[in-house]
Length: 168
Image (tube, rainbow, N blue to C red; front, side, top):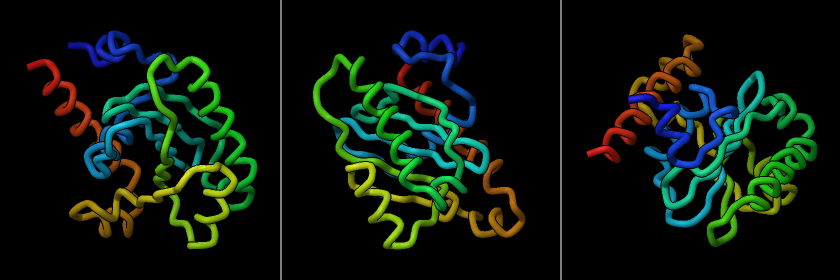
């Protein structure tokens, strides 16, 4: 089956979808197991980021953002504005019920003060998660600089398992 066809059938704009976005969000869903409702996840990367919104554990929206990890660290206000603008754009087209109740941030190791500042700027509670740290062998992948590749590979597996479960 075609992953992209399945995403289009689910109502997801595939022009904004990359394998990294799918994989990271699939892995986050497996690790975080967010409660019902609307939740956003901001995957911060060295070269750009991805913002995804999930509804009841299913992806509802993806958007690639120009914000980098360096921007989040040095100019959190600008990063928060980009996140807020993107969430407003999503909500303006969202036909479901509810508001986004939380924002998970992956790929950033916030200090307590940084987390509080970013949370205040975004206007949502922040749950930051270093996904690689929660995986067997994650410390070793970090030590040798392979965290991005490991996360994407494991995320693809999580995504495929999730998609095939829905087809049974």
